[in-house]
Image 1 (tube, rainbow, N blue to C red):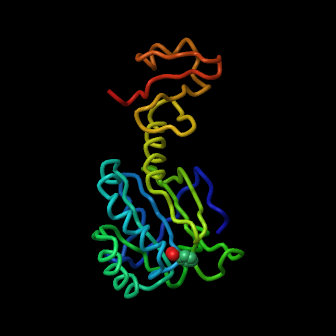
Image 2: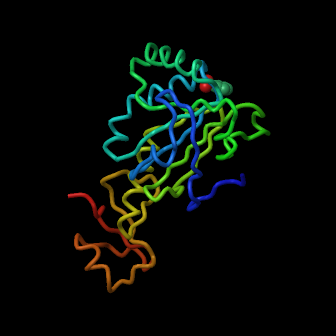
Length: 213
Ligand code: BEZ
């Protein structure tokens, strides 16, 4: 499998998970999804990551995003480790973890980076839209746990910009001003952005977030 790029269809697969066998596209349904890999079960950073995702589940639900984790460990390993995650992170793991022992999904999504580690998945993140297309990819090394606040911020931007002709500036957070995309003609701005706008430069036009009251 060549590297997956933004706009590519997220490859479908069937897999064993801690919540039963799934067909990935059927499991995604009509909403958004996040597929993320971690290097291995019973490791410290991964334990904190999966506990964090479990705690953030209501935030993902609010955004209509399903979350699924993956490592190349087996189902029994995942199930044993979940008990440790729940105990140490004071949570209940409430999303499936794929058991990818044969590395079928890892290879399909290019989650093993041999020059970093020939056997284990790195910390890949794929955000998938309702059209099953890849909207965002991020890759972290094993040594760096992910920032799931940043992932929620990304989802807010992806969902906003999917439906409105805006983009989000550096360090933007939901509720803050957005920029109008360059393809919008000045003449169309009043109709598209009734809350008003400020022209800082002809190419830098700022407007309040359109989907906020
Ligand atoms: C961890 O999750 O803690 C971890 C996994 C692999 C290498 C380094 C750290």
